[in-house]
Amino acid sequence: MAARTKIDSTHFKTIVQSDVPQGRKGKHREIVATILKDLDKLKDGSAIKVPLVELDSSKERVRSALNRATRKAGLNVATATDGNFLYIWNATESLLAERKSDSKARR
Image (cartoon, rainbow, N blue to C red; front, side):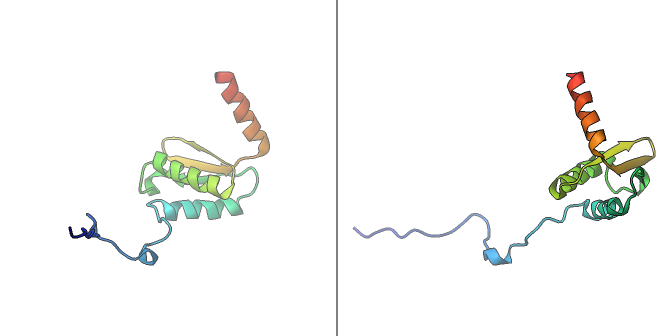
């Protein structure tokens, strides 16, 4: 009996792994990079005021992308929003401790 030969076919097309693009350039990359640069230059006690109309996506999506980027960079920032602006500032240790105690009190 003849041995069966396995046909190496895949459902999807294949490429050489070295040709696979590395890194992710998300939709919010430009605005998040701009915010991070501004945060780096920000004086203590100041906040960045980003007009919501200048955001390509919802404020929630931008905040989420910013949260991912700041956690990855090891930065502590705080955000707030009203009907017109997204405010971002460097969080101090005292603010972080205050938020933790508020969070525990709500439970």
